Every structure is written in structure tokens, then in C-alpha cells.
Image (cartoon, rainbow over all chains, first blue to last red; front, side, top):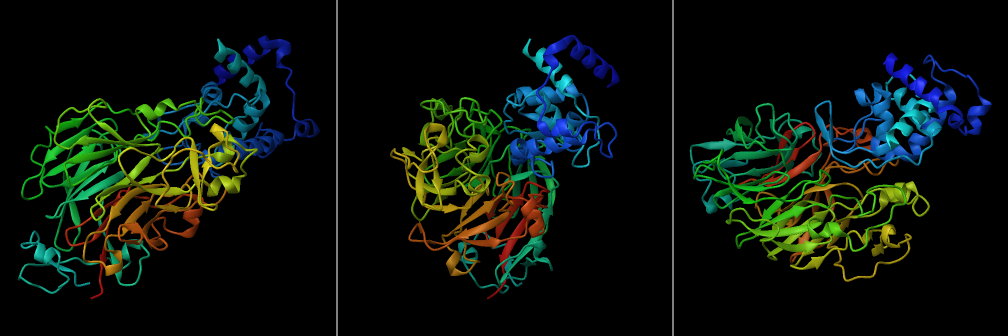
Length: 152
Length: 428
């Protein structure tokens, strides 16, 4: 995991000026505010929740538990808690027909690539720290790096 | 609780058709409802028992007159069996006696000496002997092959008519035939190409091998996904329950708010004739306006009525509640009002979020002279376990299949925990 992070960070640095993200106003107003989860910015969680409610909740449900046979759960799954690159790719490319913890999920998840890097980082940070999940935050720079690599 | 049925005379129509519930022979079987009616809420006079806990995703089921129950599993179990065989004891409790079929799927149907079962691409036929046992479990006849399965709406549900035809649902591998499926704002593909090979009911012969699209007939089209279907022998007609389209708000947030998206469109019962078109993906049925509306993917705005020569639903039910089984009741155990009416198993919704979820019940739709007559009612409720579990969609059980026993009992399968229920009428 650490290696991946370092790799991503390097990629992000290499990205240079292109990294200058437009940040939501609320984020600018509450810099460096932390929640109980170490290293997870409260503003990101707040923005992430709003994005989740707007774009994700119908399928993944208010409790993040998904729907049997159709929409994957976001709890207790390596897809959410594990490799961030794979997780970002799911948002960028969509997903269908995977088995998670031995159960099939057949509904179509469309690409969410209309979300900008910060929005993706926020919603993934929210998901990784909600519904009983606890995992490190996703940074906009990390999303950016995966998006660039994804296009190649 | 005195639904005695004689095993020895079970095949006799005189007994099967009889409401005389007292013992006629010395070998009497008494089917007893569980003290808690298997956790279900039922109308007065009805009881229910847990026939078996299969612990598997039990989709549809078939019951033979000899008390053999065939349960189709969504995917093969640990032993690699996709169809479970259960045999009932005298009190109605069954034990799993075996399994066969190495494929997952939904459809299973017993009829006149044969058991039919489906994977998500094929239809198989097995021979049943006089004991209602499958004689060729490893060598079924493959009667239909090569049906499209793109994982979405993949269930191939089946029913048969009285003339040796089998009807197979081939669900559309799409929500609303958008260029990009379920993508916000993506419009519908012109002249929806999915309908060539899916989004309808196909008719095949029940006794011919290796039929494909080329040898079958597209019996009806414009049906997004049908999981529950049954032949009505009173009207000699096929009836189907369509799963209506999802996500009006997610895809067109400027046209539909979350409340409208939760209540639209209705889940529809259709009475089909050969050649009918129910209108998917070009329209959906609005149950509050009682109108066929133009789909937003095809120019609709929530107000425009759909043009086109599409059939009217025979009845309509709350949106997104997922009707997974339809059964016309032809038994005599239940009171007169239920005869020739329809039972519908609603699997339960997910697409009503953030509004509370709904369904997870078996509905009764009264019929008169072959047509829906009067309001539907919830017949068997509380599969979910509580109203909170309904609202959150975290149901304990999800009703998925229906079958009628020889004595007129109603069987229900559950694909959440795999419980097999049997509902009986107690009053004399």
C-alpha cells in the first residue's frame, strides 16, 4: 500500500502545474480541519457525503450495503478498502459483473468520469470512512494520476 | 389445521379437488402450519410453515403431485448442483434429498411428465417418472440454446401453454436502451437494437431439441424484463409481470425529482397476444396519471404522452417492487375468491432510495372472467422481518418464486436466505 502511495505521489509531482485543482469553496474555508479519523479531512468527508447522496446512493443505498445480486456493497470489501488505483478506476470506467466476497453483482455501473479529481477524491474518502469503513483518504492528486494513466 | 391429504390417493382428481379435509384412508398426512406461521402475516384462516431451509439463493421452484420440490438456484451450490431436490414428509416438512444440473439460473417448471429448467442462456428438459422423480439428471434434453446473457436482466423465466409451447423471457440487457447504459443524460439508441434478441418473450416448442433464435418466435416485444410469467388456462393466454425501468431521477434529474423517481413507473401486468408490443424502451406507464408516457431518453419530459401502438397494462402496481413470480391459482384449498386469481411475488425494491423501500410481499390480484377485477391486496407479508427492514431494503427474506401444490397449497421460495414456505388454508 505504501509503495503504491509513494508511486502515486511521484506521479502526482510529475504532473506539475496541471495539478492545480479548482477546489470547492467550503474546502477553502475549512483548511486542515481533521476528524477523529487521523489524516482524513472533514471538508472532504462533507463534500464526499453530498456527492455520494447525489450520484451513488440510489444503487449503493444509504447504508452503503448495496443490493443483493445487483449493486455491490461498499462495506467490508477490498475494492473499497484496498488498492486506491483500482478504486479510482472503477469510478472512471464503471463496472459490471464482478464477484465480491463470493457473490455476483450484475447491474451496470456507468462511468462517473464527469466528476472532477477533487470530487472523486472526496467521495472516495467519504466511502472509505463511512458505513463502518476506516481507510486512508484519497487525494485529488492521486485521482489525477490514475486518470492520466487510465487515458493512455 | 386439518388439511389432511391422502398420499396414496393424491393423484386422484376426486381427492385433489375435494374440500373434504377429514381422513379417507388410514394413511393420513397432516400438514401443520408453524406456530408463528413461519414469520408471515396472512389473512385470517391461513397458516404457513417453513418447508425447508436451503441456505441458497432459491429462485423459482416447482412442486410435483408426489411431494417432490425442485428448487432452481441462482448459481450452483458447493456440491456443484444448480437444482435442489427436496422431498416432503407427512407433515409438510421436507428434506433435501439431492441435486443435479451444474448450472445456475432462475426458471424451473414441472408439467406433464417433464421438468423444465433454465440457465441464463439455455433451456433444458428432464423426464419425470410416475413418482415425480427426474430419471435423467445428468443427461437432460437441451431444447433451447444460445440465448443472450449480458448479466443484466439475465433470468430466463419460463412457462408452458396447453399446446406444447414453452415461453421464455429474454430480458433487455439495459435499463432504457441508452447509448451509455444508466449514464446520466445519455439518450436512447434510435430504433433500439436490443429488441432484436432481448426485451421480450420468445416462444419455442417444448419437445424440440437445440432450438435457437432462428427457430423460435418473438412472441411479444417491448418488455424490459419479465421474471414472473404464467399461462392463464381460463383465458388460454400468457400473462407477464414486467420490471419497469429504473433511475428516472439519476439519469434526468432536471425532469424528475427523487420522489417522482421512486413512484415511477408502475410495475405492470400484461395480458399478451402474439405480436404484442408493450413499448419498452420508448415509454413507461405512469400509474398516477394512468397514462403511457414518452420515455425521457426518447424525447419525453415527464408530461408528454407516448405515441405508438403499445398495449395497455391489465393492472399496475407500485414502482420498483420487482415482481419475480406470477401464479394463477387453480386450486380448491383456498376460498372461492382466490380461484383463478393471480398471486404475485414482489421481490422488493432498491430503486426507491432515498425514499423508503417497498415490496417483499406476495400480492393477490382478484380476477373475474379472465380479467383483473378489483383492487390487489397484500396476501403474505413480513418476509422482510419488520417495517424497518422493508424501509431500508435489508429484508431477511425476499420472495422470488411461486408454485401450487397438488392440494392447493401455495409455495413460496426466497432467494435471500433460501427459505421454502408453504401457505395453507385452515378454516373449514
